Image 1 (cartoon, rainbow, N blue to C red):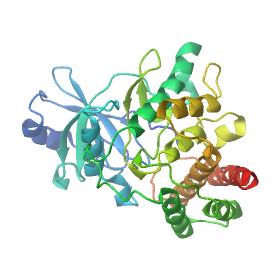
Image 2 (cartoon, rainbow, N blue to C red):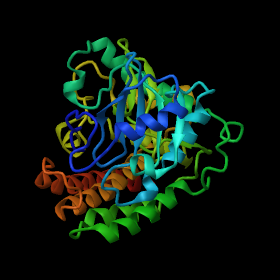
Image 3 (cartoon, rainbow, N blue to C red):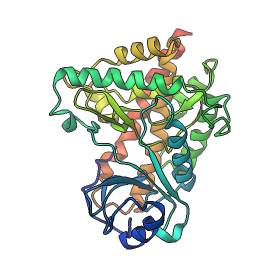
Length: 355
C-alpha cells in the first residue's frame, strides 16, 4: 500500500481538503465546545478516506473524516455509514472514537464529513512505526488486535441498531462475484492467477459461520494502541458490512506478513522480532470468539484475492493519472497485484488440496 502522505495544514495537495473558514462557521453551531480559530492538519489519507486533526484555540483536538479528493467509487466513501457505525458501537465494548457530529451538506467542505473524538496513541502500520516498541509491546499488540476483533464480532447487530446495514447471507460468494466483476472492469492486463484462484474458491465456499459486523479492512494499522500494546480505538470503518466474521480474521492473518514475499505484497511490521506469529493471532481470536478456525486458509486466500483485485484497480487509475499523485511509485504498484494474485492462488490451492 502507498505510504501515508506528508502532513499538510489545511489543504491537500491538488485541491482544498478542509476550508477552515467554512468549517469554523459550521462548527459554531455543530461543535460549540471548539474555540475558534480552528486549524486542520492531514494525518492520514491517500486513496482512502482522509482524516484530519482539527485543533482549536484552547488546544483541544478532534478528528475529521471526509472522502478522498479523487474518488472513483463514491459508494465506498459513505460518511453517513461510517458515522452510523461508530455511533452504534459507542455503547458497546468495541473501542471506537466517540462520534461528535455529522455534516451531510456538501457546500461546507465539498463533500459530506463527520467529526469524532481524537484518540491519542500510536498507529503501527509500517516497520518504521514499530521501531520504538519493545518486544513485549509488539507481542501484546498483535494479541490485543485479535482479541478486539473477537469483541467486535460478539456485538449483536440488531440491538445495536445495525441489523439493516446490509444483506447477511452468502458473504464470501458475494465478495467473489462483486470483485471478479470489478476486476474485469479495471484490469490492465491478463492475470491468470486471479481467475484460477477465483474458480478454486468459488467451488469451495464454506458454510457461513454466523453473522457479524465485518470491518472489511481489519489490521494493526487501522488500530490505535497505547504504550503497552492495548487497543484504544479501531479506525476506518468505510468497508464495513454484515456477513461472515471469519472473513475479518482471514484478512487480519493476510495483513500479517511472515516473510519477505508477503511483505512485498502487503508491507507490515509483523516480521520484526517480538511480534506474535500469524498462528498465534488466529488461535487467540478463535479461543476468544469461540469460533472454529479450521477453514482459515479459505479466508486468507479470499483476502489476498480480493486485495489483488482492488490494487489492480488502484494501479489502473494511477497509470492513467486519475489519482493525481506524483509521488506514487507506479512501477512498484504495477507488480503488487501480481504478487497478491500468486499468493491468493497458493492459498486457494491449499484449500483445494485439503478437500
